[in-house]
Image (cartoon, rainbow, N blue to C red):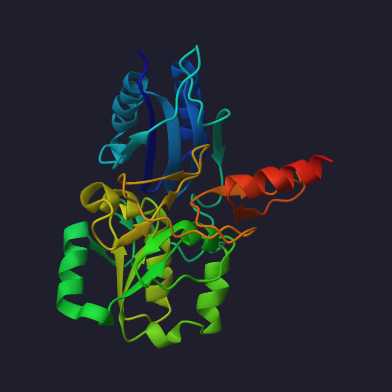
Length: 296
């Protein structure tokens, strides 16, 4: 019986021929029947894939067989299912693309990458080290959410600063505006889903004079695996597949507020108008009403 899984991963490393990596990954993914999204640039690779656990393990072995990717941190989570051909139900297809950035901050000229990863980023903190920092510095520590504001509506670290961003490209202008200059003298812990956005964001903050910047290693995913909902995290984790969100335990707090009725929910949904790209936190009842109204 198939066991559906989803993997999340990234590697910052110089790649001399991103197009060759794209072709390799496209052909490999198609041969294994995987679905998901991979983005490749001269600075590395970022992706999420879904499929049966045994097939994904085959992919991991081949992926790690390429020297620059041998130490990749693979984050595993439960998928919702596979079809009769063993293909993931969490993604519509396999997409493998070459882009200027593997995470789109709109500042490719600022990013510096070597064989050890991003140059000039924040100090890495394991989940345990994060707790040690909190024990030592207390309320002085500032959590800084490196995701889009919508994601933080359904889950975030307690008392986190959540910038008003629709896309990661908004961070550069906000930092340059001086909106968060008051944090430059404080210990700032950046965090994001799996760690990739913090890699870039922490380097952008460091280069703009933030003197004590950290990044949560492995992101919210690794933290949740270790502490579940019994630590500093509150709510559900927004994910970029058909699941839309995931919880770390059976007692996850529900902190999202429906845009329609104000009820508590961890549910997000696309605008019913296909031309509208805006997502919202909305409960099932309100979503059904707005979809029905749009159809009429």
